Length: 177
Image (cartoon, rainbow, N blue to C red):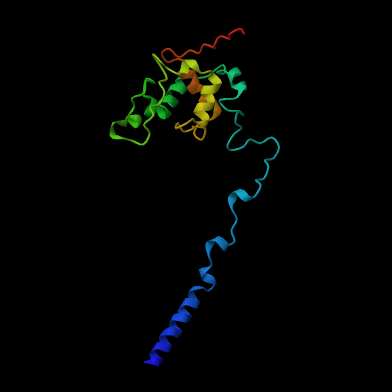
């Protein structure tokens, strides 16, 4: 019996040592290179990035109030983009009540999207720059569509939104102090 016990202990000790050999190196200690650890090469002179140049800023910056829909914005293109990206939540007419945000079944987001046209719409309260950065970069639960649309496409979409019922922007009146 002692010989069997000695053999079992020896096999157990050797197998434990075998598992701790180099092929069981912990991944934390492994050598690897993360993609974001190095600097990307700069583009050659007079070339355009594949990701295209983006309009700098955000929807809360003071400069966004000065932005407006550029001349030549195509409302037909904007309607097509609205139908693709916006109707799932905001509805075909911008009134909401779309299937994605129908919360009768207890879905994950109990907050309805804002109404974009008609009575009580938020579009008339926001300037073009604010709408631009909201569509491109997203907001609280709305995803940003900058990955799918070029800046010109976002302007087409905003131009279409301004043609919807009751959505023309009126700048707030400054109160004299």
